[in-house]
Image (tube, rainbow, N blue to C red; front, side, top):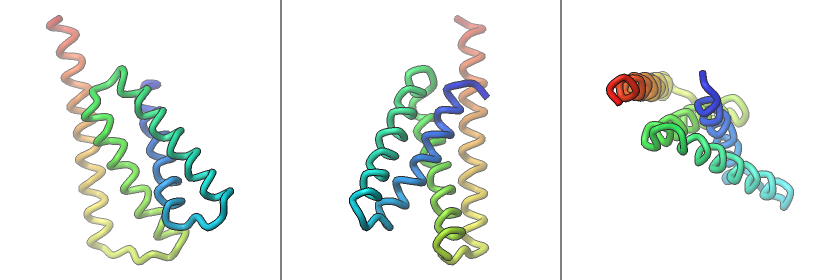
Length: 114
């Protein structure tokens, strides 16, 4: 995994943090942490999108963030996690992986042609 994709994954981890913070923050320090997570998350995503296809970066960012948020809510806050939710998360992650693989192929094909 190259540096830009690692930034997207880290940005998605911070996305999980700020999304959960939006729901559960009660004190100024928690809101400050939520705001910091937003800044870090979007900054990393923007930096990665300068070198990678922006549509794929955004889809991977949102997909990983969504799956991570659902799983974190289940683990940390005992949110119900049905078999249907798990199936849909697997489908979401399969789509994200597929997009990443497809963008990798098109990038290498463009280098060969160009």
